[in-house]
Structures are given as C-alpha cells and as structure tokens.
Amino acid sequence: MDQNQVSVETSDTSLRTENWEPKIVAFLCNWCSYAGADLAGGSRVKYPANVRIIRVPCSARIDPKLVLKGLEKEHVDGVIVSGCHPGDCHYTEGNYYARRRMLMFHRLMEFIGIDSQRIRMSWVSASEGTKWADVVTQVVEDIRALGPLHPRETANARDH
Ligand code: FES
Image (cartoon, rainbow, N blue to C red; front, side):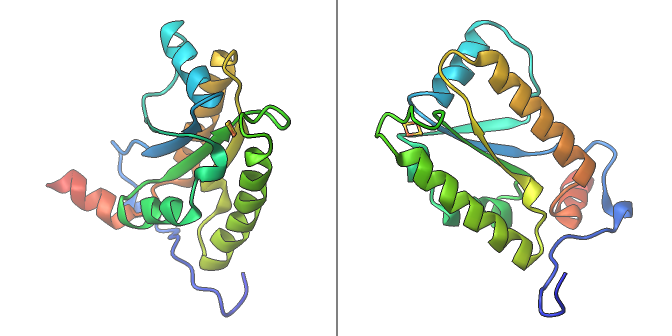
C-alpha cells in the first residue's frame, strides 16, 4: 500500500466476533441473475442466507456510490454485482458498462484501503440457479476469511 493511502480495513482480529455472520448485499439484474436466484430458490438449491438481494433493471444501473454507501454506512461486509453473461444483456451492452465501472471501482476500493475482494462481479443467467448458489457460497466463504469490514460496530452490535 502506498504511503498516501488510508486504510480503513483493520487487522485487529481480536475484534472479530465469534457469532459474526457476513452481511452481503447482492445487486442482481432483473433479466438474468435475479431470475437465476429465483430459480435457485424455486429449486430449493441450498446456499447461505447471508445475502440480501436488490433487483435492478440491468447491471449497468448499479451506481458505485450505492455500493460504497452500503459498505460505509450500512455495515455491509461484501457486495455481489451480477448480470447477464457478456453478449446476453437485455439492453445489449449494459453489462459491458457495468464490468468497466466495477473494474474502476475495484481500483478505488484498493486506494481507500478496502480489500477489493469484498466486491464480486459475476455473470449468472436465468437458467443458472446452481451457479448463483455457488457464487453466494464462495463469496460468503471469502468474506468470512477476511473478517468484518466494521469490526468495532459488529462487536458493539453483538454486545447490545
Ligand atoms: Fe442483465 Fe443488462 S439486463 S446485465
């Protein structure tokens, strides 16, 4: 990390809570990934219940400021951004814009000291319920390994 960077991540593992569960928010495009998640639910595919889903018309509509706000103010530990596979976007090329935006956003995350692993981009189609379950399972595992993004607040919430 550069000297001028400010780190908001903490390595203070003593603040990690025993009962902590990662809080993940997933922004899913309506046409593919949301339908894929719906298929997973309808098919009773099991995956961790740590994810809150926000449905958006297209992955291109996901404003990085919303993602940042979630991480900063809502004590979210990780974010999934998921849309149609490249070439399959309902609006032709929205997912290409989303992919570029998220690449830049990853760099911003690293610059402000948040591990970019906390933001995951995936392509999940309407027929990939099992893939959706795999993405969630992997992200929850990865975030669990990183620990809470806001350990103090997490510990305080547990104590009250
Ligand atoms: Fe799914 Fe654009 S409609 S990514």
